[in-house]
Length: 455
Image (cartoon, rainbow, N blue to C red; front, side, top):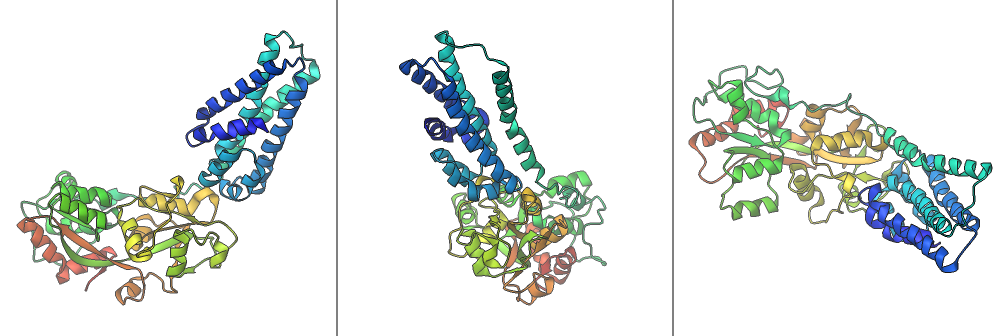
């Protein structure tokens, strides 16, 4: 009982980082057993080792059985296992919340061997350590080999993650302008506007890069591919927005800025001008093998507030829902907060449930732990054209599919506008470019790219 209390109470501070950070807990456990033996002056160590061995068999054995039953899924293990590992008290809570089961096996192994170290150190110091006979040596060898089992457990869990690299790819290079890229949309007739000098510097959300890259290629004349790479950049939404505030970009393309971004613009004394140029569907997707095809807005809100925990509550299988998120300030996270959650507070994601890039969310939903229980969100064009991962499927929302027709006729409930945004005192060519985007030619180019224009 005492060893689990010692390691379970102090080891929780190391379990969040790495297995090596658990060493102080094991050292404390070894010191306890050494002092315990010295205080009671035990001359026989066998009963003590049998006691810690029984505890090791129970804790490590039960973890192994549950991992096998859960097909080495740490998520399912987190649902059932904490009840079996008292008195590893604080650690039980930590691993249940953070799913750090790849460290838990090592915690049990380390508890056993550190206790043995403390016991044998005292016996060696008092010259009571007898020579081991063949059966005892064999027993220690077996226990040592069993102690290596967490290596296999971690490997088995990692192998359950599906490699989706062959099913999707984010190749932004094919959208670079001025390189005769066939992926970029074009007009089949000359346009009325041509910009020959003082070219506006463009930047924006990754999901909109094919659109504003096609705009630059259509309007800019006499630009080389090398020059174009400096004039047309693609960053995440937060970086693109910051480039506008720092006057490193002249026009950026993104969804409506968040409240925090509006405040940042005010602090930088930048007056934002937003010009609506098109619409896009905000979509939710799951693994293609997930039986759920439709969710209501209320169900999605409940999932991301962690009020709905299992897919069985919304017509799926009995499996815990993994709700993936994006960082604050990203375009998709802002859309999620503004359009979907409204005034409702989203639950804070666990460390592994937040992805810095949108393609990470899609690949995560496609292959997380080789399960079908994750859900994520993005924009329609990015999810279906730029990534096009065949292992995910888009969900209907309130029974409506996110098609271009349903976006245009406002039947799809989660439709977001995207904007061309300038800062204080935009250049003349920046204004000419934005005005052109609202013309028939500009809207035709947006539609040909694959987004939904205003016309």
